[in-house]
Amino acid sequence: MANTIVIFGASGDLTSRKLIPALYRLQRKQRLPAETRIVGVARSDYTSESWRGMLAESTAGFLGAEFDPAAWEQFAQLVHYVPGDVTQAEDVRRLSGALESLETGSPAARIYYLSTAPRLYEPAVAQLGAAGLADESRGARRIVIEKPLGTDLASAHALNVALHQVFGERQIYRIDHYLGKETVQNLLVLRFANSIFEPIWNRNYIDHVQITVAEEVRVGRRGGYYDSSGVLRDMFQNHLLQLMTITAMETPVRFEADLVRDEKVKVLRAVRKLAGADFAQCAVRGQYEGYLAEEGVPANSQTATFAALKLHVDNWRWNGVPFYLRSGKAMSCRTTQIVIQFRKPPQMLFADGRRGDFDANRLVIQIQPAEGIQLHFLTKVPDAGMRLQMTDLDFRFGREFSGQLPDAYQRLLLDVLNGDASLFARSDEVELAWGIVDPILAAWNSPAAPELEHYPLGEWGPACSTRWMRQQNREWFDVCPVLH
Ligand code: BG6
Image (cartoon, rainbow, N blue to C red):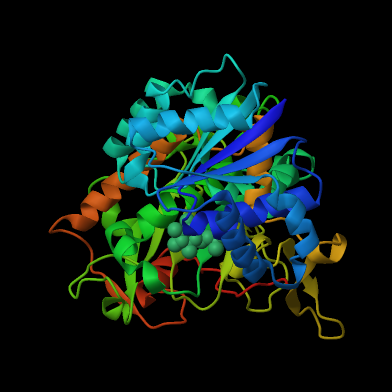
């Protein structure tokens, strides 16, 4: 069956920077199903011709030497533009007619991608429903939305209710672009296609887990949005908790969307809610120096640009194993890594004075920028008595496989076209994640909020984060990409 991808918010940044380049690359690799067309919708007054011209320019700028004008010409034939406001009934009815004439009377599956401002999600969905565009009698109808999916549990729930009034849950694809990253999917493969990890992937062997998403960038031009969001909403509610669920989940019965998501939901349900004194003991926050001078940020802002949380997953596998999650802007380097820190040997035979936690085995799963896995283990330094040294075994995607790793959107768009929701968040996942983050946000907004410590640019967050780990006899793995 043919496919029509309708992009609302067609003149926006996400469309030109991510969606169109991803679709163009898929077309070049001949991965787009035959008879796929792309229809942009926005209020701007483009024609199909002028929109194509604009996209050619932005895509060429984005892809550089990879951009091939001849291939673009072929791709551009799939691209159309219909001006309109998705919140206006009349415009949506007109769009419906335009889609039918493009589909020339034969049924097509449709994907509605809401690449609009989030405040338009609910009115847009209502209009799609009112115009009968969610009706599946002439082919599948799927809707794709992106974060922010609400700003707290109540608004996320309201959004889910609005979505469910028009679309069934299986028609809804909530993108978290971290799930489209190759190494995140490889974590599933590492855990569930290899038998050697399962026996040690639990409290008997693992001391703790660290999940770090460090960014070198500052908030840049996004100060206005960021200040009302902060690091917990921007990074933890979605990306970090997703990485945690994949690290912690049980083996799904089969690799099917609902079975995978059932297991992730169980992890979120098992996360112990912070209460009372926990807010001081299990969370630290910071703000980078100079944040208050960023465009769009109020001079007295208390928004955290860095946070570290200690979460417990109260189930048999993880009892007593803390999950440390941290993320921040303006940090030393860009790296996303999951560190599985194993326990120390019960008895150290080789007295060389190195007894710290960091001497125990460690598995580093590096999600980005370079993708790979590293296992750290102790070896004997030759000809030096019984002196030990931490050494490593490396696996690097870049060395093992040729070709460029696809951008997350390529994989995710293809999955939507194929109707596979395994790598998308379900409504209960989103709400449970807010249920974890909301109480921390509330505590940080209360008079009893812990101090917001400032940190210099280019460090691993505020000094209190390092002290906090040391008080627990642990060390952050503060290492810029171990693999290149
Ligand atoms: C987005 C956040 O969801 O993820 C940004 O809004 C952040 O603030 C970005 O910079 C990080 O994504 P990536 O893929 O660059 O790690």
